Image (cartoon, rainbow, N blue to C red; front, side):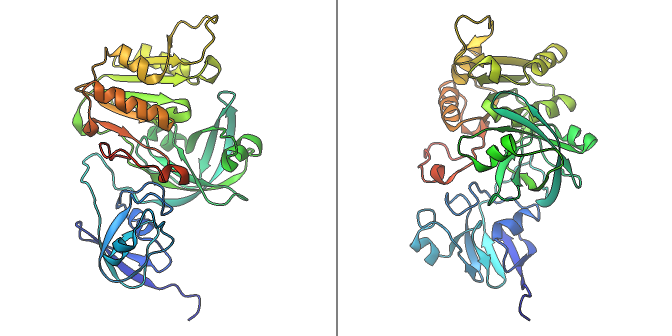
Length: 359
């Protein structure tokens, strides 16, 4: 009997949904692979976002950080879904928000081969992956990538629209070189056409809430353009009738990528407006566009008034924080502000504002 993995039943309340779960599988993984989204962020027991209540049965709590899961919480049957594994049939209660715009897409494992690599800027590469099988996803979601010789996986947003991925079988990633980052360094210095990668997806709840029927504002910085690009192409391809604005910031013109593409989209789609801005472009250059940080330029473009729209933020944490402050000062509040931070171990130890709970 050695080596045989036992299977249990996982029931997720308040949905009343039951599915099989292996003894070496986390509660979160089992839920996601059955199309059930449990709120989560770091995936490594560091941030506490995926807390669930074990109502019936027993679990192995795993390597949950004592900062993310206190001893008294364990005693009360609280577990982190990303770490906890079943020891019997289990019933859990999770904070699952009903979202009419969310598609129930099961998480899946794929292999992919690199078909093309292109320099988009001096620090950002475009990488096109040929998928082993179709990957349904919502524009704005991301995948986790694993490469040979590097421990663990890393999250990368999908940069092209679902329609393009379905038509071509190619999934595009925009990968910025992070100093000291093993995975991004591999893509920039060692990756070559034909290399095979491991991929899981789709992940995330960063997608347009179409049911709100409001104008959409995208605020992006750096390689954070990936998700908004996918979302904008998806909106335009499906006939979105409301105004769409992209305010995109980079340090200088050399780092500004897909600029001509967005200028063309703005000329051919009356509902789309594109506002590129540079924060560190030499004053002596012939740049005729906006100068400054993304939140400053957005405030200027909309005269400091953001009520009546939805905002989607993607970029460095400092940019996101500054944009949230500017949007809220302009009468746009949490219900209409969406963003997704990829949480590192360092980020997970930071205290988030109690005034803003979304991740």
